Image (cartoon, rainbow, N blue to C red; front, side, top):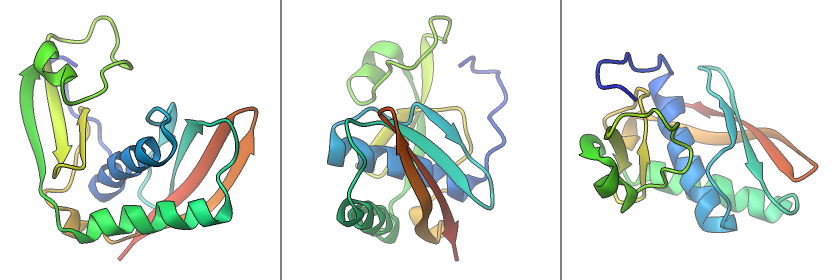
Length: 150
């Protein structure tokens, strides 16, 4: 990301929830962050590389964990740091080779840290409730479609 580059025009509550969902998936399944995401105001989707589909109990746990983090009213903060410092707190493996040496790191409390150029809420209390709408699993890709509602 270049510092003068415009921030992506994502819906702030949905985009911040993507960060929380990604970290929840990393913690629960040891997978990487979403390999593909499409974030929209009404509903969004994320794809994760998994060896098998999550069970219904795990899907319920994902929902509960994401909503628990949202309910903690965590501050969402932004800081600029060099790659070396950022690599100590965030996974930078998806950064393009031509990304700037100075990165914008978004933190959701102490729950998640990620290099990101998107727009975010200031506090998770602004998000609403997370709901998984549908999901499917094919060839090691689990796709989850979700939304946040007030």
